[in-house]
Length: 271
Length: 271
Image (cartoon, rainbow over all chains, first blue to last red; front, top):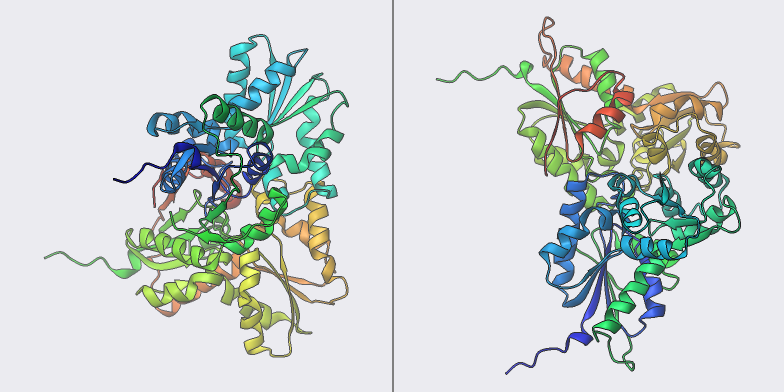
């Protein structure tokens, strides 16, 4: 008789369109440090932010199926674009908990805003979906939510132009609409954006609170695992596995910058 | 008995990773104005410029197979990235003439340079391939070729930031290396770059000649068709068909800007 592997020792599966989701994984290594993680970056089809809902759903399902082949206990959609377009579909189809980035970030913003004036930065697909707006207004019907699509942030971050004057100019332009909005809370609604946090903060009033959707997603994972006794044992030394749909070497170099630690043994797969 | 369609009345098939190839099509509508064109933009997997050679070859073959299903007499790879990585493979596999963007642009530069100091701007994949360098040095072994990867040009152009100060800053930075090179010729080695031509020219000495790979590609198509009597009849009113792997509406809006005329009836296909 084959003994079933206890659920708590299974891995957490995480996918993103590329390296952005490593900012979620970075937080997971701090908050749930005993968990094995299988990360998939869909680098052959990155970026998702300008693509249609149908295409994003199709890619998300394919990514999820790949991760489910690696014996996972939770599926983390570490990409706001995929979370905003595909999370309902993934939750309908698959029989394990699916955690995205949208709801935890929206709930954090709802909890901390005082004047109910909230800004959301995201890719074009995330902003068009209106998911942040809907999630916030479901609990705060009078909230004034300013959603801003920032399509150039991903390429700028991927090119490591984190402190560049061109990046500053583009941030200034995207955020100009906020000048008269008196927001007290801003959501970084893309897992690439934490790398621009300090430059974005410079354009905001010093009292504006920034919600990092990578951090709130990792907090949600921790909470879910605690509530359902899904944590791995405290003595476990975690294993991290990385898969990409294109060039592993480029992923290692760039990913290091997002994850904050070295990435080894990345395997290329075709989806 | 079914009469075979005369070869000259068949269409010209053109593919690009997205809208960039429409700058080639734009020149084709001037130089071979009686030809039917079937254009395929791989907008679900755009951009190609940062992807691996293997992935670019795979996508190019899939795109070519799609176009071959539309009864074409010539295949045009209207993308420098795909041309630089996949043209040999496409020419090996398929039994119709395959024209890319690299050789015609390199030959034009070879023909017009006087001091043999030539610069090439392209995506990271095009520059890494070294194809421009090799093509030029094969005929001018002493040429000094400065190749510059400009990975942010495509997203900036796709966001229509054609005259933006951030774009100017990035152009200045990419081209800084040319200050002491005394080049007399510069190749725009990506079909998105013609839209930045005037801003790029501002960073160059006024005597530098710019080779637009979209123009030289269209000239090569014309020459090939003349040499092999493949032209459609002069009285023919051309038909243009457009296919994309993602959101047709976005392609129409953005493509209009590249093609210089309205785009109608775009069909979405899954590859």
